Length: 80
Picture 1 (cartoon, rainbow, N blue to C red):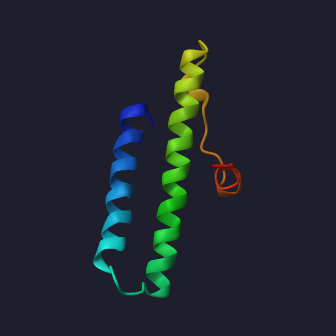
Picture 2 (tube, rainbow, N blue to C red; picture 1 turned 180 degrees about the horizontal axis):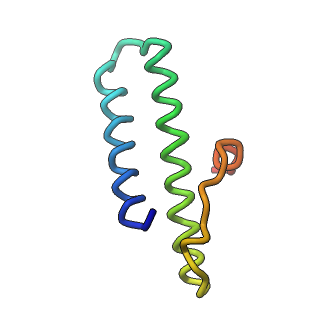
């Protein structure tokens, strides 16, 4: 997956996240919807992390294609 594909996937996931949140504004989400929202948030974090890895590798003169998707535990464990 190249940078453009990752950015496109980020857009798709962000659109899905916003749709879930806006469709149920003022109402609670069902269990399935909450699970989907959580999965979407994790996938977004993984995509952003992958994009940052690729950019960092490129800036360091390394092959960006050697970057890999990190696990949920890793990307969700970062300090904000």
